[in-house]
Length: 206
Ligand SMILES: Nc1ncnc2c1ncn2[C@@H]1O[C@H](COP(=O)(O)OP(=O)(O)OP(=O)(O)O)[C@@H](O)[C@H]1O
Ligand SMILES: [Mg+2]
Image (cartoon, rainbow, N blue to C red; front, side, top):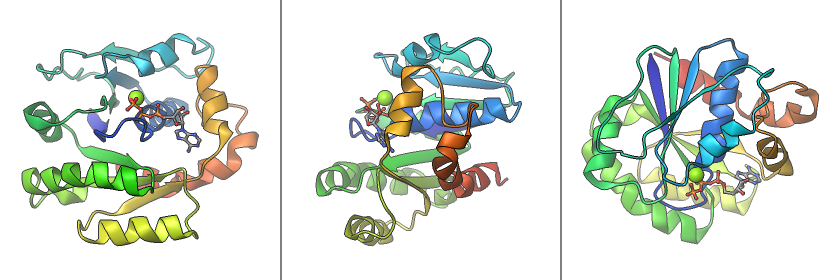
């Protein structure tokens, strides 16, 4: 079993969007995947309830009691969707239990400021193991000033940007039906699927 946690204490950064789509990617690759919802709002599990049983299956798992790290060991992959405000010792324990941490950031000064403390904490807690953390620039066009601002901001932290995902209703539309951009029919999401390629490679790297 390998585990990927999607986390950022800033609300609305795109954690659930990333976590559900990543789970959908693994499912469409024929992997046995569990989506572990750490959020009391249970957005991921609500989404899963809408998923057509004919689609590649994703197992849901709720761990709103985040005090106990209790990851299922049977699946090939566990994807964890952390809640807004997730930090402190609970976060620390989870950081040690997972193989990768994905941090979605929207490139606005408000979001970057709110994420800065979190990145500093990660730097202290994971010193020497920063390789396991990757940023996902959310709702962004890589050629814009916003992208430059984000790259400049991240230079202090030495954390790689593993994907730039554009702002598109495709994510909103698929989510409404319990789907992901990786579920068939894929043609209409082709541009977005391409934007995930580097992220997949980074996750799969041993
Ligand atoms: N790339 C994108 N393009 C367009 N809309 C997006 C994109 N990514 C996320 N969104 C939308 O932004 C909103 C917030 O995303 P999401 O719920 O994934 O954030 P979150 O970090 O899980 O929020 P919370 O902190 O409340 O758990 C949602 O309405 C989602 O559909
Ligand atoms: Mg969420």
